[in-house]
Amino acid sequence: MKKRSAEGTRRPRPRKSLFIITGISGAGRSQALKCFEDFGFFCVDNLPIALLDRFASLLARERHPARVALGIDIREGRFLRSLAQPLKGLREKGFSYRIIFLDASDRVVVQRYSETRHRHPLGKNLLSAVRRERRILTDLKAISDKVIDTSDMTLGELKETLSEALELKQTREMNLSIVSFGYKYGLPLDADIVMDVRFMPNPNYISSLRRKTGLEAAVRKFLVGQPACREFLSKYSDLIQFLLPNYIREGKSYLTIAVGCTGGRHRSVFITRYLTQELQRSGYAVREFHRDIHRG
View 1 (tube, rainbow, N blue to C red):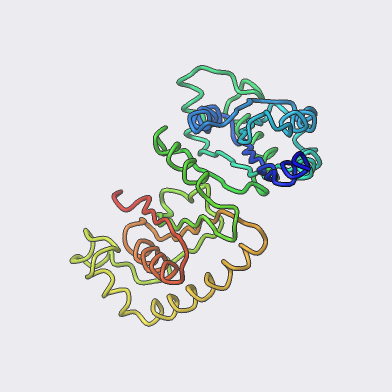
View 2 (view 1 turned 135 degrees about the horizontal axis):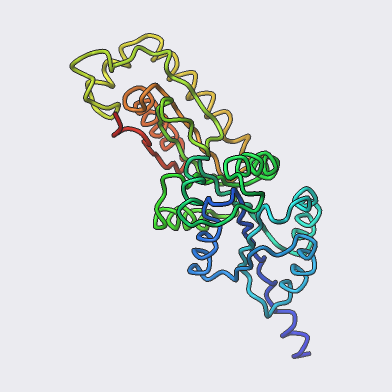
């Protein structure tokens, strides 16, 4: 009876968490895996996808670590197309997994390869190889839970971003980021939703506002004084408030909203700050970034 009682009080095994780290070669996948090692994860780089099911069975045993990070890259070739079935098997074995996709601009990737003098897995013509890899990984990027643009990141910033991803609870919460940017500097690579606010009058053409930013009262007063701006703020805020619960319901854990104007200094900055405050008042945890505010 005592034996049965002891067995009856056993706690259920904790659900094991697995992060799949993938992305464009040269975007920092190896560095990300090192960060996960620092976080206490058991890390494996470039495990063949064909062995993923067997690997998961091994990890499912209680004596193995409950937190695992797995690196997968373009060297898997055609096997990347068959990733869906092994991922389904992970859930059946009690794993909760998330896919993190590391990306960087072509210019940055080429520069990094040139500095290290490493050979790209897809060939000697570096730029062609990067663009071909981008096409091959399109579907994998689309199903990723989080896309991280490392183009302008230091290793410390990458580690901080990954740390925040680990802190996201397995609930109906969402890791929400809103970033302002300037179109003349290019689109943010990790944006899920992009809004162009260049239809608004540009404070840059007003001498007293040119050197200010969208965070300052004079610029805010000018923009709110425009009827089109006021109407946009109401409608766009309502649209995002409608979308977020539906994204969460479909299981999306990460969302990046990008707001762009010409230089990323006035209009997009103001809209980003306004939307951040509105969503915070609605109870969302929001991270606010202004990528190009100090350029130009």
